[in-house]
Image (cartoon, rainbow, N blue to C red; front, side, top):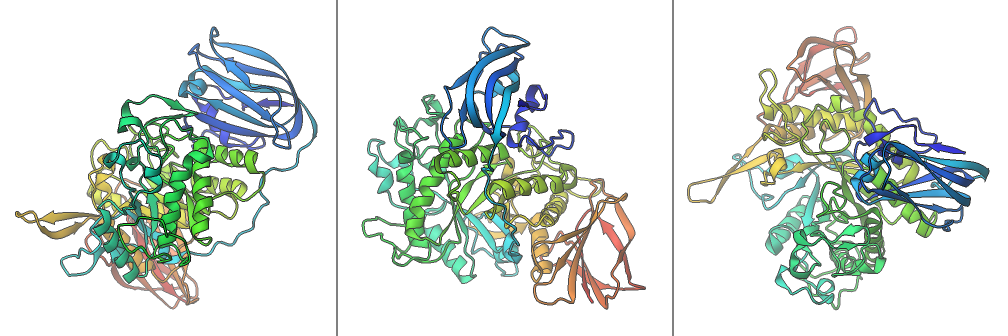
Length: 636
């Protein structure tokens, strides 16, 4: 058998590592990642049980890097010794490394530096022969008809203390914008305590939300009033298990993970060992006991502040482990795939003891990093075989720019159509169907910025302000994602401007204050009104849609939604996928058998879109189409 990584050299090599041997990789369409996890970790499942005799690898630069390879048989047992592919002393040449490995089924490849795979070793060939057919190690395929999440799939992410604030008409703004809410819990910060006692984390009180217990109480009361159960995610930077809390200056390595600010374990503990995560798992046990739906959960020894200590309050829908623990661009926040797996496994196992019916999700990755998810899958497989994966779902955050599936800084935002949303989402759907069938997947952060210098910045286009373009692209991205019928929810990044650098201008509203510094009113931006328009029109329709037109010669896109209860009604969404200010005055849509129709056009300055009756003649409707969203509600 010859395993040749498609002959791809240079920085594109690592794009192969989230694929299988029989997968054709086309780098021209941009649907594969152009980034990797650090430290790099990947697995290759061979298509047969094989004897391996030689490894060839090509060294482009003598950077002192190396890759570590481990091999496993069909029973998940280690085969032979660890193989090290070194670059020292080599330059632009092939190296042949004789090995004698029998009955190999799985290959693990690790690299600890970015240059190991981008600048140093740029091609690997594994030489040998297959000896027997290999049984599939992947979960059995699941033919799943996803439940349509409806209006609850529309949501916002960060909300802060603005939840009770009202607009100038006295209406509560949040209730007009979202039903799915994601907010952050910050554990008791260890800046208050000397970091000498491991029990500090286990026994710490629980504070909810960025504004401590008062905000948390108001938040949960309001959610209960509106019959909304939010998703709660951990904001990890608040727990620093490092001597003196000097995370930024600490370069000690713990296993494969740099000992930096975003840690939940005691000094010196190895994050790649499950027992290191017991303190965090205990915190999640208490959170789930409080806000899950098990009144019999045991909290007799807990010290609780920040709300009622009553168990089984049934106020949360989802408990998410962390947010962006895999920030490949910053060792300050990075967790290796192994550390990530041990963390979610500990949190899931202990959390289910508090409430077996609680939904516990794997923490969001920045971007759609399938190489990282694939590594996590195989880490679980090596430890537990085909037992169920310890997560009820997966989250990811992605802001679309020219970096494709990643979200690198120094880039610029591009339109959802130029980004290739359909192809990327279809690729992601195929991945999860194979590796994690039946698991819910959520897009937990998206949005567009309007501040200069942000990698997600949009510009004014032909008479439209940048805020209006932001609104257009927001609705168009959601419309495209809905047609793949894969995501369970989509969360817009921020309800209000939160002064967090490149994300600040994604906020849907800006609070205004009088000269005395007290609250006066909120300004709602076009993206906020756009999402409110969307909910106003689509509230009685399914979240998922059928794609009817995929950008024809005029770049016209059309999708169609079904009404949740009235089979006579259908909702068409029509828009131009361009970004030049173009419009078409007389687009024709065929709706044979339709009796009446209403057209809704996006309103940048109000919660409800402009609407009027639309004439149907000979089974056709003619109406103008632009780069903003147009809805046509048709009754047959």
